[in-house]
Structure formats: C-alpha cells, structure tokens
Image (cartoon, rainbow, N blue to C red; front, side, top):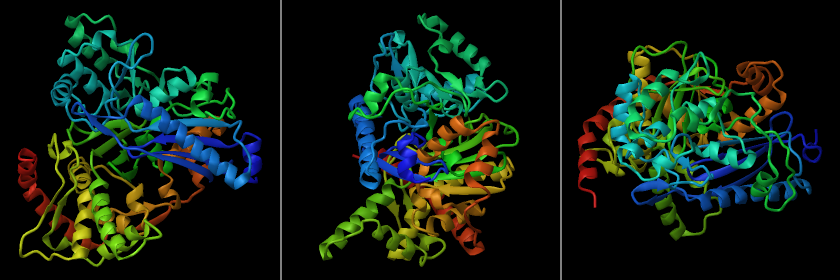
Length: 529
C-alpha cells in the first residue's frame, strides 16, 4: 500500500526508543518497512556523582523526536499522523526511577551506567545465589537502602525508563518481560518475577520497617503480544504537542533495548544470538537450558516472550572510538569543508582492514565509564603502545575497533569455552556495523563465529519495538519466533561473514596484550585527576 494511504488510514505502527545518545522514532507500514523516522540527540549528565537525564530532558526529547517524525511524514507524504495501529516504547534497560504515591519522581533518574551499586549487587548476588549486576534496578534500590537515603520509605512504585514513559502515556504500570528481567530475575516457568527472590529480599529489608512490599512496588510483567493499554488523552498531548495525534491507540508492553535488539535481528529462539554495538555493547545468546553456575560476567535476562538469555553487557563500546574520529575529522576540516560527516567513518574503518591482525602491538581501552566485566568501577580512556610497536593509522584504527569489542569477547569466552553454549547464528546490529564489512569482520574474529548483518542493522531498537507493536496488533495465534520468521523476515538471514583464521589468531594476540596491560588502566584510573 502507498505509505500516504497507510498513514491516512491509521495502519502505520510507531516505535520509539530512548537510546543513550539518541531518541529515535520509526514509522513502519503493513509490511514492516520503515516509511518515516525522527530523532533527537541527547547526552547523559554527571550530577552529584551519578549519571542521569533530567525529567525535563526526557519529555522534551520525546516531543522533539516525535515532532521530527511528524515533519518527515509531512515532507514526504503531505499528511498528518492522526491514528496509528499500534505504538511501542523502548528504552535503555535497568536503572532506577522511584515514585511516591502522587506519582512524583523521588530522585533523578539513575541510569544503567552508574557503578555505585557494588555493595548492594554483591550482597544480593550472594543472597539469591544468582548474578545480580550493578546496573539492575534491584541493585539500585538496595543500594539506596544501604545508603539510608531519605526517599526510600516514600516509594510507592519504581520502574525503568521505558516503563515510566509508557505509564505516563497510558496510565498503566506494566513492563515487558524482557525489560522486567533487568529489574529482578524472572522465572521462565511463570513468566513473572522469581517468587523466592522477592521473598528473600522482603525478609532482608524487613528490619527497616518500610511501609511497602517489593511485590507491590514493581511493575506488572507482560509477555510480547499482550495488550498493555491505550494512549490516553493526556498521553497523546504529551507525545504530540501539535494536537493531531488522537487518543485510543493501543500500546504493546514497553521493552528494553536488549529485547528490541533481539527482535530486530530475529534472534529470539534458542541457539540464536545477536550483538548490539553502539554507546554500550552487549551480546544476547538465547539458551537451551540454564547455565551450570552463576558468573559475574554473565547476566541472565529473557527474550520479550520469556525465554532465558545469557547476556554479556559492556558499559563502553563506541564512545571513545567516536571521540578519536571526531579529532581526526577536526584535522580534516582544517584542510577544507566536509559535506558528509559519515564518510570519514567509512574511510577510517575501511583503512583499518589494512592493519596487522594483532594491531601491531597497539592496545586501546575505551573505558569512558566503569567496566564491570573486567572489574573496573571507574574508567579512563587509554591508548597504550611501546616504542617497538607498529604505530600506523591502520593499526591505530584497528586497535580502537578491537578495543570496542574486547570486553565483549572476554565475557563470551566464558559462555563458549566454559559453559559450552551452542549457537547457530549471531547477528550484529548498531552503529558499529553501519560501515559494511569492517565491524562484522572484526566481531567474527573476536568471537570466532560467523556473524550476519541484515540491511535493517542500522534501524535498531526503534524498529524492533515497532515490530513488537505489530505482533500485538497482527500476531494472531503465532508465537513470536514464528511471527518474526514467517511474517517479518520471511527467511532473510542477512549477509554472513565467517571468521578468518589469521584474524582470529590476531585478535587472540591483541587480547593477550590487552589483559596484560589492564594494570596500566587500573593505574590510570587510580591517578586520574
């Protein structure tokens, strides 16, 4: 159908995702093809030692993103968006947003990036006999309790960013099971929070005498395909300040960026996986069975339909790489104007292919913030070389690209080499893969596994949550894997690159240097200004 007619007849579906550096909106047609998009650039702020985005920034960003989408639709099709078949909200997972009985935010949003929750995460991991990462919502809550923060007794509800936005658009305090699994572990049998862990937590904090119970302040958990409320009159005005968007549009359960990444890469069935590489990076491998034991490098979450997933989450990925590209671009600007800012990425990434498989001995640490997988509560970006190393631009860029995925490899080595997890297909998506071949080839070397990338790799989580909106509206009786296989992707598995043995050996050599120089990174953190 013509996109204009799709929009006019209210058959388009809207997906919105709050990423770390960009809020993105994607409008898709009945064949799930993007027909318009909008975006808003933003950055987190370090306030009182904690990474946050202000409440005002959240809503301004959402409204500006939607206004950008609306302008794109108007320019392309000369029509206004008034009705939609469905809306989906996604956002960066984890973090901490507590509210009082009146719905007021008690403390500024604490994002996944904060690493101040070490004592809480360690104690809960021991109590639950389960790896509870620093960034999980339950860690943030318990750390606030350990810190005796004044707001804790007033908590009536706490949720993630996606859950908050969805709540304010619909009035529903719900969360998709994938995002909920980053608040507190999920029981794959019941599809709800682990009852034994809820009970253990409540006994742990009982001496504090809080007027709330954990179960009562958590969002209700919903699986993919469930109806999660409709856009309220207030919500419509919050989203579209122009007033054209009408209330009553159904919303799917809000999800985290991990879940939408799995959907966008058709990696929700056992023995499939995906790697998302942007500001942060994470791999998601859907498991056939539980792991043999807890491991602090491996987070256990779920797919949007409740299957267990082994997640390796790295706080840092492309931020330091982007900083170096920006620096090189500044030099390039001195030589004359640049028309396409993305072209420099293509040129530098492609040139990295000319570097030595081991980067000539060069090592790069992309630790803009702490990196729990390697044991760093704080980070400092660092580039290390010796006088005898092969210092060239190709090796430098290759080292930066390797550095962006080195921690990811460390975590996945545990899965593949110690837990002997099997995977049939891994699909890459996110900014690292926008330049063809390069990121895909290096990731194949790092994981020693074939890596596929689809044409939709750059669409990301906004497209993924739009697909979940379509599944709610059009999924009929299909399972989520069957809906994706048969309806959305129809057999398309993307373009695959197999690992090159020489590059696999080169990455192993790079990683040996990387691990050996970790004390240098530790010293840089200890003595940073």
